Length: 433
Image 1: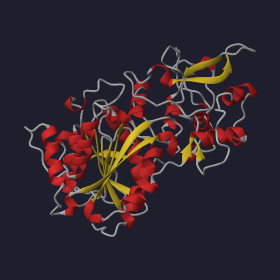
Image 2 (image 1 turned 45 degrees about the horizontal axis):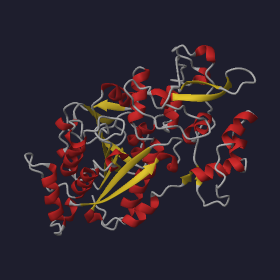
Image 3 (image 1 turned 60 degrees about the vertical axis):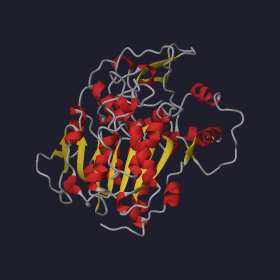
Image 4 (image 1 turned 180 degrees about the vertical axis):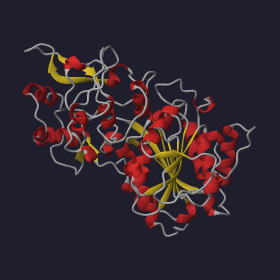
């Protein structure tokens, strides 16, 4: 059963904007927040959410009872009124479209019409959530965007300091800086904001994925920010992966050709500390294919080389595990290697951006040769490196499924932060409805 169809252990509540394929939604729900509302603009992503338990809300503004399908509003968030949820929401979550700030995009930033951060601020004013979780790309840390990122953090801290629509954000930022010098007349209208730069691999995701996570707690709750920051410290490391290869514990999990093993071992730096620092080994692409977390003990079958034919191939009963032809490697697009975390899954123009979706296999081009064969990753393999459970359905053609995955938050990464938010709210001395 899909995770969002299961009832949380206690009745915390959540709202998700820019829900996409549901990665962050699964994480937030898994932490015990019952969905009161979801919003998504892309039609295919809406179909994915419906396939996993969502039901279109319609025009009726009502609070769903526990056990009811979680309501989905499909359409432009700018047209969404959430005032009826005021005081009913524990956590507001979402990843505003990252293309305005992405290193791989046009990078117009604040001038880009796709910049949806203002909609997060509007939602904070309308529903006054206890906490906010917001994910975005590290492109916001670029020098050209850093002033706007600082402004985002200040506006998230003081969302009720309204911006005149005819005022440039720079002027409003000056107003926010002035407002910060004064104590708030109503602490529930201000937030304590924490920004964390993350690599998803450091949180148990078998993928190198650099992002920023912004979390805000309503000031009147008195959340212990230091404890929260400790709760979201990384627990996995590259050095621990190398140590697991050197002490054979990694290889004991995987039966591979000695030449493949030697290839991976040759890339281990000579100065790797042998003493453990308590961190867990990075998970690799090979780990993901073998099965981790919800998919543990469910290895994906190999794709036969004569089945790279775009046809449904359900070896072992896995959906979306379909061979795709014409993969190639070219300059600037190196393939994924099995004994490393996968490269960043990207949405891409057509869902298959160059080498980012290509993988080297353990099969040699010719017997006794030195060149290994490569192919495109399947959608199911891609979903696994995004830590989606196998029973989560993805709708649309291959390119759309890959796009949804590339735009998603890895479930495992989101879970670390959602769980920490839940704990912080439970411990908060000022917690209240």
